[in-house]
Amino acid sequence: MGRSKKKKFSQSNPDENKLIRLSEPREGTIRYRFSIFDHGLVLPDTGNANARDAICVNTIMSALKSYEQNTWEETIRNRHHDHFIKKDRLAPFALERLTEINLDDAESFFRLRCNGSQRLWGIRKDDTFYVLWWDPYHQIC
Image 1 (cartoon, one colour):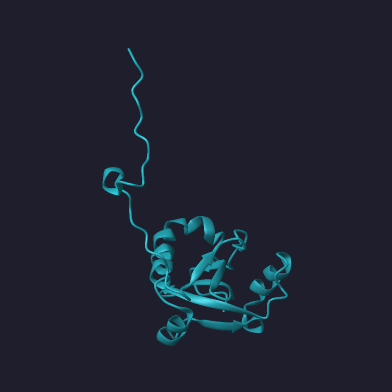
Image 2 (tube, helix red, strand yellow):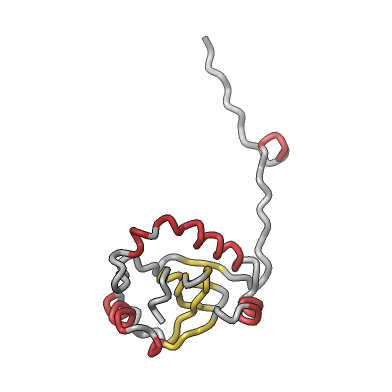
């Protein structure tokens, strides 16, 4: 009994390997980073929303997918729910949490509306949205 030979991956024949074609993003489209995502935010009167709302991942991913097709200019122009919010407008528990995680030096945050009352909060730097919080009940502001 001999060893069966494994097929080597070859880019020269994409049909043989059933490669999925990934499109490059347009210049200036929204990019995401999760390096500052805060798993520890507990919303008032809801317990640990991150654990209980884990099933909302599809909602979040669908929203992110729809946003990534647009540039920042298109997002702000076409979606009046998506905009910068000054730090002093955030709820006291959010301000306290910013101090705890050493992000209290940020002056403003960007809010993306997922649907209904659900929001993603983060910091925008150039074309990148650094996702900070998932706010399923619109309590942060």
